[in-house]
Image (tube, rainbow, N blue to C red; front, side, top):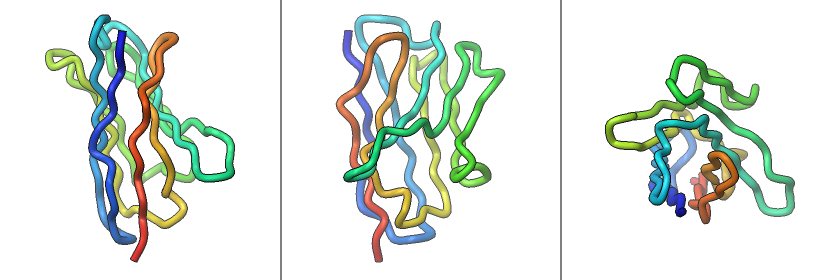
Length: 111
């Protein structure tokens, strides 16, 4: 089983990125998926989650209105659209489902 995140990078404040989460070895579409992030020197925090059928999502307060989590069940993918990025969004972003974690993708928001 493997979870792989992609789409991170360096972006200026106010910019956008879309992170992708893909899985092999199990059917991601059958399970709830959660995005976490961990900034340097800080604890890992939940960012957003989506239920298995995509009918319910949750967000941490600091990203509400800016981030959107979605999924494509046919492609077995989950996405995190991040808009109006701020320097405090800088972190390694992780995708988690069931008991598995991806390796993370770095998001850096800097002028």
